[in-house]
Structures are given as structure tokens and as C-alpha cells.
Length: 423
Image (cartoon, rainbow, N blue to C red):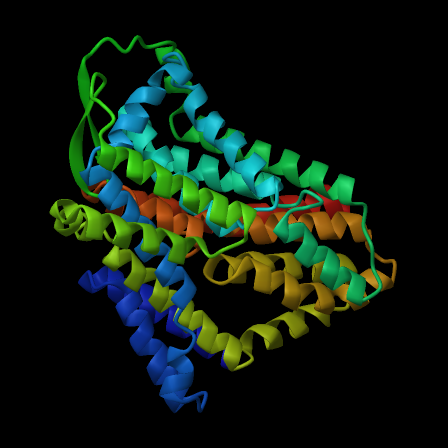
């Protein structure tokens, strides 16, 4: 009965928001309050504690900082100066960001940090080269997942630590190899479906204009290739570099680092502060925060764990494995992927220790199913893509991220199950 109520709540959230054009997050907060208090017996303060404060800080800090960087011309200067890096070969741009994301995350960076660092710049490149922003955003997210299971990556260490507690070990090299290949394939599909062939047909484009118009976070600006590096731009780049060092080298929170950098720039150069504040993705923060709060309420009520336990109790091992992968995909699309590994791996332990399914194959499939849905607009990466898209394209990008993310909920668990568990 609880599962039916939870699903009915989601249907109400999506239906009402689409019917009346209300922010989905606002509807989700109301439904979470009503169901949480009246049906699940929770307190309002307990429900509110599920609001993802860290995600809010990340979105706030990153969009504020890059709003300042766009307003003072730094982003445009970087993009204009980097045009020569791909020598006009526009089809390489999405793959360059895929590789960068894989390297950074594979070196031990948090996925959220990698996405926060690369997505705003990647979308600026997308606008410069007239590339679908959805494609570049997905390339970064897929690249993040591709590097996420290296032996020194955060995702791998979480999975390995949980497996170790239940007495299970897997080959780290095989896990990294197959998850990397899977994400390359996923990214190749995105490249083909979202404009890659057209980019290849465009071939090499000579950049002969003195300036061009770019977009970032809802505004427009002119990239002037002959522009000079002012003191303000240099300070901005130094602060952005300090975020990279702090997040990757010292594991500091990227959201707070970005917010500190944005406030510093606003204090030093207040003339751009008002414009930068206009680029903060408040609608996106409300949207994502509301949905995540609803899912958190269900987790507190035990609905998610109850569902996972029901799946684990299915008598047929292969079917139980498939259902567990589907649960991983569905919940990870709306909640923390890290948390799903912590919750689902122990629940899968009885299934794995019986020897009825391959341990390595199932773990590979679980990693793919839980991470491929990070492209959902309700995840940090997906939310950053939507928040950093120019305003007039933001709704279309959100729909695109929603369609892709929901497709991954179905396709990733099923294909991973077929390839790594069944075969």
C-alpha cells in the first residue's frame, strides 16, 4: 500500500505541474508535506531536513560564479582563446569534454565537483560552436561516470567498501574497464542521436570572425578575439583555478568554494554583481530541491528499503537481479547515487553469496544502472546542465534531459542485466 501511495504522489506531482505550468519542485514540496504528515506520520521539520542543502549550495555557488565570469567577459575570453584548441573540428568538442571529465573523476574528484567545474564552460563552448547543449552536457556527465569507477575514484571506493563489509571482493581492473566501455557506448549513442553526425558533416570550420555572440545562463555577450586580459579577468581565472585546486587537491566542497569566489568578485567588482545574481538558477534549485525532498521523505518512511527488500525476496535469482537493477536506476535518478550503493549492495549480498549469479557481472551491472541515470535533470549533473543553459532554451533542455534520463532508467538496467548478468 505504501508503494502505491508513493507512486500516486509522483503522478500527482508530474500531472499537476504539467497541467497548470507550476514549478514541479513547489508541487513536490507540498505533496511531500501532505503525505509525510497525514499518511506517514512524519513532522514538518523532518520533511524539510530532506531538502538537499548541499545541492542548493552547489547550484547557487556555481551559477553565481559563472554569472560573474560571464558578466565581466572572462568566460567569453576563455572560450574565444580556446577556439584554436580543436582547430575548428567541431565534432571533437563534445568528446574533449568527455575525456576531461573521465580524467578528473578518475583521478579521485567527486562527480559533483567535476560536473560543477566543466558543465558551465562546456555549455559556453556549445554555444560558441552551435552545438546542442544537451549533447555537451551529457558528454560531461557520461565522462564523469566513465572515470567514476577507477581504483582511486570515489564511486569505486564506496562500492568496494560496502562489498568488503559483507565479505565480497571484485576485480577492480575489470570493473573499471567494463564500466568505462559502457559509458563510451552510452556517449556514442548520445552523440549520434543529438547532432553528432551533423557536426561531422560540418567538418573543420575556420574561425575568421573578429567576434561572435555567446550565451550562458540566460544572457548574451560578445566574444572578442582581440580582447585583452584585464585585471578583473585575471582575478576571476585565479579564483576559478583555486576552486579546481581546492576541490580536487583538498576535497573541499565545490559549492561553498564557488560561492566564496563569487562573493569575493562581487565585493571587488560590484558593477557586475546585479547582473550575475540574475543568472542564479532559482527555478532549477526549487525544481530539484522539491523532487529530492519528496524522495527523501519516502526514504525516511522506509518505502525505498521496503521496495528493495521485496525485490531481494523474489525467488528467481535472475529476475531478482533485474528488479534490483531497476530499483537502483529509478531511485538514483532522483536521489544520491552514492546512497544507493550503500543501501542496495548489502541487500544484494544474499543473492550474490548463493552463487546463482556472477558476482563481478552483477556489480558491474549495478554500477552502470545506478550511474547512467545521473543524466536525470533531478541529479546534480543534470540540474547544472539545465541551470547553465540559456534561458530561452532552458525548458527544451530540461525536457531533453528528462527524456534521456527516463530512458536510461529503462535501458541501462535492462541492457546491463542482459550483458553482464545473463550472458
